[in-house]
Image (cartoon, rainbow, N blue to C red; front, side, top):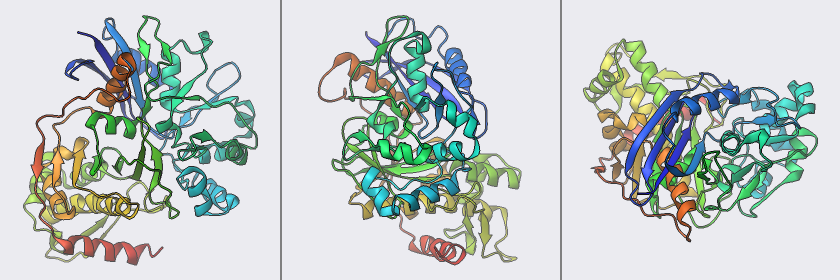
Length: 463
């Protein structure tokens, strides 16, 4: 049995799966925590990966790394890290994003150039922030990597290796200076952001082998976390994935690139040679944990409370912008609760409002994908919060198609492993790995819930 490994280096932790390359069956796994925050020394990721893989990869023949998108890893000409990496959820470059959008000629110009309109999460905006706020650090930058690029490079030997860092088209498409439609970098946008050109990773083909580990395992190109999840789920036409982790995302695989001039949909590439239009919100599972903390209960009890309340939460509407928001682009917004009365301010209705508020934002995200030509036949609900019975029940009231809930699993790491198996085997398509044990929740439309949410959102944030 040939074994391959997939790594999910996320914001909060690193997860590693070792799987059978033929079937995708998980053989063993490892995990380690990352520091909390919106910036992180990349060395902490390496330490966590070393901890999580200790004794795990001895007989593995190929490795793939999927990582959190957008982060800025700045290296000097010796390959040393210039400053802690800024992560996707760091919003300090919000004003820089606005400046860059204006300087290129507006949102439509960016959508045409890169498929996306950059907001604070995108690497290109973090480079502008670095040039403006930390010019001494900016002057030292010789090359810019993404988190997964850096980890793959370290697995191949890093500064002790002559290998040039590599990335893949999926993760490159989230930088703001690579074009999915053209399949090439835009050096002019790098210059616009940083004031000069710097080195960037080579973009590898989807199943290319980009190096080897010291133990001799092949290294796949790796990809971004959302692209890894799409691979792990085996997304096909008509499938829309809604992921409920630290952030919330809705994405679908398409055969043609998208370019949304409103900036709502990011026109990413996927890890197979196709495309991955995606909408991201900053606030997902943490909305539920915040609500549970407020009520003094655990997330399981929050689910029970929410199910005890009627759809619409008795008129309570939560705008869940607890950490600002990316979609809609409101980095300085804060959460707010509306429609409070003496009758509806109860633990069950507050719990229900938390679940509905979180999911209404993701239902809006699916609508935005539809506006870009996606035609959903089902929604696949994944991420930690998908295990909540209340989340599943509310999802049925908001999405107009069946909701499929795969069994809990590390689908980003599984997708990275699938890419590793593809690199090991070769061929035009990745291996077919079934996803068994899917729970199907049939639609239970309650249009009034989304209508109330939309009315509040427009009143509070008219733009």
